[in-house]
Length: 107
Image (cartoon, rainbow, N blue to C red):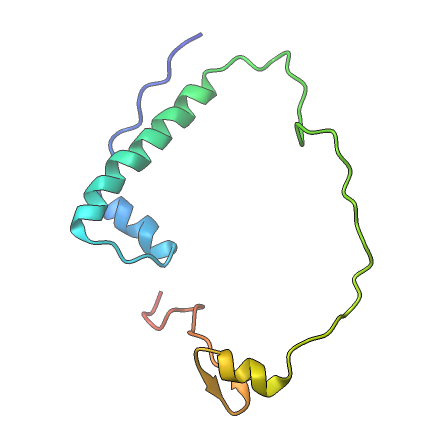
């Protein structure tokens, strides 16, 4: 079994790109910390690629259980005004949420 070479260390820019895609704001200190942590994860994935799995059957779930489904029936809900009262923000009788698609930054 041959050892795969360690992936090259992540650059700060690569960590910032992943953080941006995950909508995370990181400080410079966090970027440096996550460079090492993400690099360790990638190195572990490379170790997994070295495993000989030729005699191993594919497995979707290691636990032999069946989903116990119940009918999806509506139950009691909060009155609209009570829901709006506990929402962080509301506009025109609707709950206002931050824009997440497009992000407003041209991305």
